[in-house]
Length: 216
Image 1: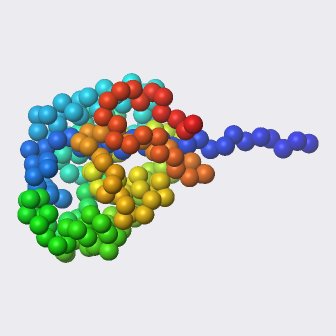
Image 2: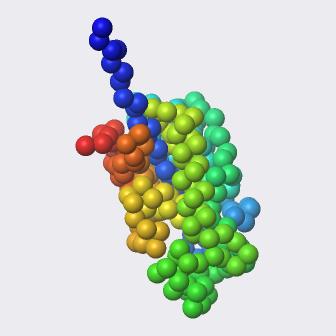
């Protein structure tokens, strides 16, 4: 008697969205400080991202970092699909510790800044998190959400460094090189996870259709 054939498990598609522009984007390292909201331009970016994602045939869940700027970006995406935004601490920004709220123009003058750019795996923010810890947290979060939505399409609104860390892990690239990845405000990065491993479908997409996203 022939054994029944089982279809291979479907891949789970993650759409990783960086939050939209804030009044301090590119000026301040806000980190996990509360009270930072989207600028008007960021709100428009979030609406545009929602329109792009809404054109997909399905979206099963929308998750967001707890920070206001991420939740405000996730809101129109979820609303367009009639879904609820689920807040997940695993999607939080890196903990920048004592550097939280500092001006970037001052930080780039510090000798430690060269380590942040060229050897991030060796750096821990003073009284904060290391890049390696941040990457482990982000990847573990995606793995947990993948198990909860196997074969589905999941939107995760997070932050630039966390998305870069996820991309570098999916591509098998050492985190010391993750600063070479660009993740713009409200860009969409798509990674498909299957039992055979992740496939990066697009990185830092800021326009155009997402309908053809699939492994080649």
